Image 1 (tube, rainbow, N blue to C red):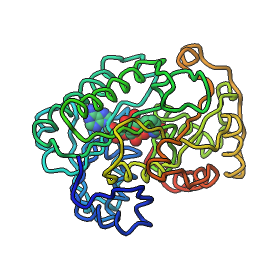
Image 2 (image 1 turned 90 degrees about the vertical axis):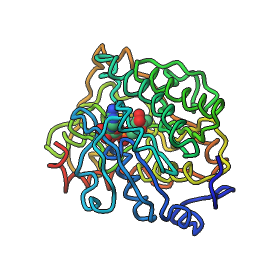
Image 3 (image 1 turned 180 degrees about the horizontal axis):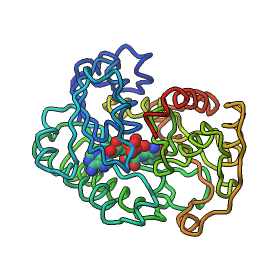
Length: 346
Ligand SMILES: NC(=O)c1ccc[n+]([C@@H]2O[C@H](COP(=O)([O-])OP(=O)(O)OC[C@H]3O[C@@H](n4cnc5c(N)ncnc54)[C@H](O)[C@@H]3O)[C@@H](O)[C@H]2O)c1
């Protein structure tokens, strides 16, 4: 659904584009999962752009939400500690928002296998309920949904583009796919303005590092900072990584671009690397440390997707977005962040 003053062409980047800066000024924005890794980085940028930002987060301890993620920003954002499964809270919070970044989710693949019902409740049922309530109380909002590369399962070819068949290998991938389909259905049938980005591995400051629930890179950083060797399972798997700032750019573009087609778009990077080389790169940047190669635990092997990297050509063509931060730069700034703030993440 078009908004007044929408940016109608490939808009480029918010900080370079005067129209985009103006577009976000005083816009009412809701971020579900706003105290999490990506949500908080997005919130910081939106505040800089002059938006009025509300964050919803349940702060369930096993997930990535952390109040320290908005350290210094407390007075600039509204924080509501609610659960997106609570439809009575959501009904109120969804009202009068121009853009809703829908990022709340259970993100651990292993947890989705151990506790599939919770994953279904948050990543499936609550997503449907959010769309139903939007339809009722805020049908003109623009909704940007953070989907995942996990929906593709084991790649049949590389790089994986949006035409690749979807075949999730775990409960999380199935539920995220269902959420994507709900967002598309509500666009097609009810005209809700939904946009879907399929994120690849995203890294940077404010991610969960206490364990490997969000990303294995978190636990690697913990090991490195604690002077322990990094445990790499397998190591030969190929991956691509996006700096969280590049993902924030992509989300902002999806929120502001008035002419974006409703299909799902991959994010991704053409800078691919094996996990072993990634661990070695981390050690080199840190200046010390060791890497241990371990064989894959059987339960993880079953849901591992092997080599993966994305084609982001469709999103690049539609909007001009492309990753601008190198992997080395991202690892460097991420390590620096945790060297300073590790205690808030353990
Ligand atoms: N980080 C990645 O590499 C990556 C990759 C693909 C997709 N994604 C998607 O991006 C989104 C954000 O991921 P993230 O990496 O920032 O993870 P995160 O865990 O840091 O953020 C998710 C946030 O959602 C909150 N949340 C979870 N359940 C909730 C509920 N029921 N009600 C309210 N809040 C709830 C958590 O507390 C957390 O703060 C997720 O939907 C995830 O599936 C992330």
